[in-house]
Amino acid sequence: MVEAIIPEETREAVRLLDQRLLPWEERYLTVREAQDTAEAIRQMAVRGAPAIGIAAAYGLALHMGRRKGLPLPDRRRAFREAYRLLAESRPTAVNLFWALRRLAQVWEAYGEGERPGAVDALWEEARRLHEEDRQQNRRIGQQGAEALWAYLRGRGAVQEGGRIAVYTHCNTGSLATGGYGTAFSILRQLWQEGRLSHVYAGETRPRFQGGRLTAWELQKEGIPFTVVVDSAAGALMAQGKVQAVVVGADRIARNGDVANKIGTYTLAVLAKAHGIPFVVAAPTSTLDGDTPTGEAIPIEERDPEEVQGKEPCRYLAPGAPVWNPAFDVTPASLVTLWITEKGSVKPPFSSNPLSL
Ligand code: MRU
Image 1 (cartoon, rainbow, N blue to C red):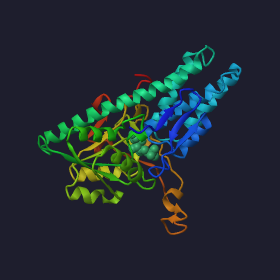
Image 2 (cartoon, rainbow, N blue to C red):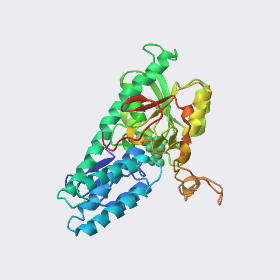
Image 3 (spheres, rainbow, N blue to C red):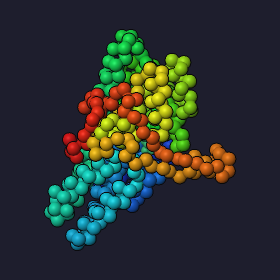
Image 4 (cartoon, rainbow, N blue to C red):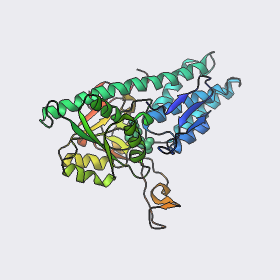
């Protein structure tokens, strides 16, 4: 399995597989504190909601590890500043704030750094949430495959012993998480059970997480797939070529509205129009019970240059104005199944308590 985040045994650095270079180059970049970790998140060297949270947790632990020798007031100030810096790196994925809050809880339990062992405890908490994410993702795969199969069987949409083709969007695999993936974990499970015939991966403009990253992970898994431009999804469904859409999430509001990669909403509308189940898979750390509906979810807008391209690869007419939201919101009414590590769940959701 691909390892997107590798903590060093020395506890002085973490290696992040630079996802901007994939699949052409497999190069790790090394982060040692909050500033470089926040920059890696902002620039999307590390990306995907759970992976962002894990990276931020390590970034905070690394930052404090380098400041062990400072007087207590300076250490406390360093913690607050690093926390803020990391929290400001990307706004939409709630896993980032959830992971930082978990570390803040540990810091507080150690008298905000006054009690000995606080820094070690931060590192261990980061390791713990990394490991928990992997385990949860395995369960998401098992639970999701079972729930989707039961749903399709219940509607006579698949025969016993039959296989389905699934459409997915963006990248939700090992790269986007602590391991295994969320929606990708369901694909992996269906494949292992002999229930998956084919995956259609939307290329996911403008950063091509589908065409670059999901395609790369599917190749490594030996799962048959085809990449399509995002706007081919409707044609595929109209031709009866996909039996389900399975995607991840960056934040799920209390009422079940889902923020995910731009284009997800379009897929949900299309799935509804074609009578195809629309499945959202995420760990409970993506549930945000404090946000009542999707309307209140902050949506990141990124540099127009991502859409315009730059020399030598320009895509648009020079000077063409661009709107570049990184995410959209799919209303709960369009979601067929919400899958977490706890199985198929239904709104209203409360936030995940800070630890399991
Ligand atoms: O902008 P990105 O690449 O971080 O967006 C990622 C997504 O939208 C994923 O679908 C989501 O984080 C779920 S990843 C398991």
